[in-house]
Amino acid sequence: MTVFVLLLILGINSASAVTHSLHYFYTASSGIKGFPEFVTVGMVDGQTFYYYDSVLKKAVPKQDWMARNEGPEYWERETLTSLGTEQTFKANIEIAKQRFNQTGGVHVFQRMYGCEWDDEIGVTKAYYQHGYDGEDFLVLDLKTESWIAPKQQAFPTKLKWDRDRDYKTVEKNYFYQECPEWLKKYLDYGRNSLMRTELPSVSFLQKTPSSPVTCHATGFYPDRAEIFWRKDGVEIHEDVDKGEILPNNDGTFQMSVNISLPSTEDWTQYECVFQLSGEQDVVHQLEKRNILTNNPNSNIVIIPIIVAVVVLAAIGFILYKNKNAKRPPSPVDNAEVQEQMISNLNYKQSCKGYYSKSSLG
Image (tube, rainbow, N blue to C red):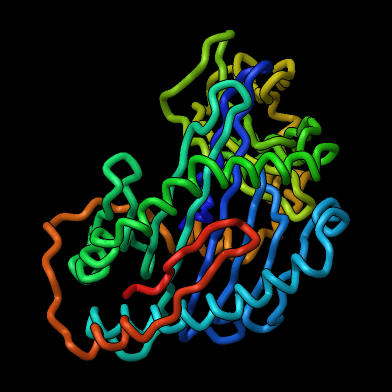
């Protein structure tokens, strides 16, 4: 998931029209020592505002604006919801392990869903998918209102959910009506924080004289940004490697772009350009004397960059990668699994206005 995650928070580079996002990530895990067996994270425009885990046993706000605008009843209701969801997701891991003929080991079951909304054109994107051990397990196609099972082990669940017409109606209503309404509500709560603009600090980094040069931008907000290299005013695509936008622990973001340069060339011809939606470009000319490096012959040493990210986002980026299925799904005949699926809990996401059947059955 990447973090997915991540991973998932997109924007439109326009000063007049901006896309906002509401995303939820659920992660159940087994075999990971010192890590909660279940975690829920809610994010608005890449900012974590909601958190629950199986150790804390309590849903809590992660932003002041959320704590100010939702009282005890909201958090008590979310806690009860999360307690039920936790049990369902723990059962889902056991179901998946049975279907894949697994016993011990480290396993992760995830659900990711959300919507993106533009104040001019409405909903621009909605998605709902499950992942198991870093791969797609079930994906909802909202256009056809049917489930896609990239793995044959997910086929029994696909068949059951496809037959549930009421479930499909609730899903469609949530993603195209309720999700945008909740998103707009949260945006209003955190307007001063979510609508702000912060430009980054930009640094040039290089491990050794023969390593690629990295242009690293950190501390910017929002995440609707681009970064690239130019030579003599022209954008470069060859020998360039751009990284993903990642969250910092203070709610801002960071990103970087690498370039491989000949040591004999005049590097001052190159410049790093950072673009933030609605703002003027931030341009830095590359000069060797300004590069931070670990070269023992240099007087400058790179300061380690420590990024504290949301636990779930880290899992999503590392473990959840979308992969295309290489073989068509086929049903799995396992009476014990079917019986366990039927007994799993359904739960109500009352705070989000969405009744969701998160059990694999």
